[in-house]
Image (cartoon, rainbow, N blue to C red):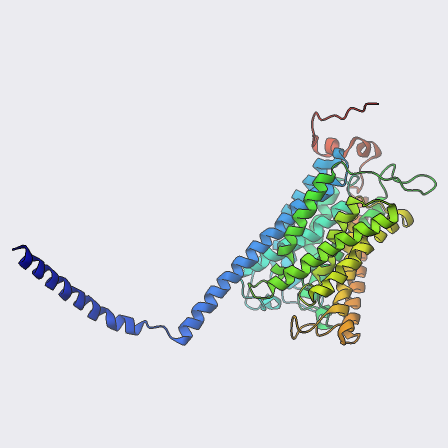
Length: 463
């Protein structure tokens, strides 16, 4: 009995299965993949991957805000720590709105050779952001990635103007940097503007981001004047030590990590060049730190930690423009020069020019932004990014590329110095640029923010 029942069950099951298979065969035949459908699927997945890569690297660059906050806080005095942290927080917040409303359109929107005149509030009428058509990520992804770069340019300024700038003044000038100053010069180079047409290249922003921030920092530091007690009547300089080298060191490591988003992420695509860019970026940073350490040891008879930290940052700034265009060996030389250059620049700006820059922002970002931009014209090799820069001077390419890079450096310098002066002059004559002497001596934390970073913490001196 059981055997007959089992045979009937199997027979019915086989029959049903045959019907289902036969019914499904036409559908399977209709849905069989073609070369076109497979190519479309691969392209779609590629765009998804590009978006993911760009967003992750943008988040790394965003985290650089924490790195800047730690570096600047560590290199300044404890009584100004809250002020430094607040400025690094708020410049990103205000910059987010300003860059969304106006800055992104000025930088990448269709307009003329000098600035974009469309695309405000991320409004895309079709072809509005043609200068970014080289990447296939979404418009929101493009905006977010470029936003964190704009925030970096703005936050660079705070270090050179630390410990004596009014908070409201900082907010105003950081808004205008994100709104107009940074986007206009960025349009010249990255938005299809006149410098790009002249053949200038800046892969991830040695000039677009770092020199812009550095030059505005220079103007601000000059117009503010030095901190109280920085210089003696005879012109000699007094070292004003930062309160936490461990915080500064942590900040440098955060920035170093963030740079792996800054440079490789500038591909805005998950392609095979990102590993090469990461290698050149890391090489320049490491050698920059070594070179600064050795230089400080020769000059000061001590291996200066602050100089070594700034040496790593100098190497990172310098390699930002050429990272995709040069070999790892060339990156070594770029980092080496940057590490030496930052030490001499810090000493020259402090001792000779008598410009008070508490964290060395001008030397790291402006001076080495220039060096990095010019190094493209020296070390670029067409083999790494065919059809872009061509070869630099040291690889048989002649002076054409180097002269285009020099034109970009000079043009952005003039733009930033003029607009920076006008901006700070207006602020100085309206809301005021600098705190009073008494506020400076008490520390900006108390008067500007009503609190202390280390409440109740005291240092007792013993004999």
